[in-house]
Amino acid sequence: AAPRQPPGAATDGSREDYAAKLRRRYPFLTESLARHYSRTYGSNTEWILGEATSLLDLGEDFGHEFYEAELKYLVDHEWVRRTEDAIWRRTKEGMWLTAEQQSRITQWLAAYVEKHQLSLAS
Image (cartoon, rainbow, N blue to C red):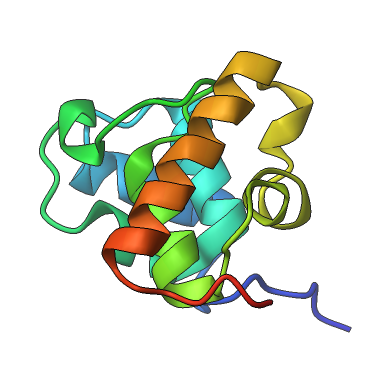
């Protein structure tokens, strides 16, 4: 059986090939970030990166290359409403983020959800 693909998976090659393609299109991406996006989001990564031309375009870095653009994607497209959903259930970034960084994500999420009048019900 073929390996299970992530949501938005590119069907024309491996995850490593797609990570390399991302780095060609977005040369500012680190190798680890391109691999993370390829593995976690597949071709949906382009919704995260959009027209970005630098890491600064991805917004706040909450730590461990977990950027605001990724968190926005998770809220807008994957129904994330709580920090635990973002950093444990969906990305596992919680393994590397400090309590202070996790608290900052919680603050950001609360403000974003309120600003966009999104439901906190999950």
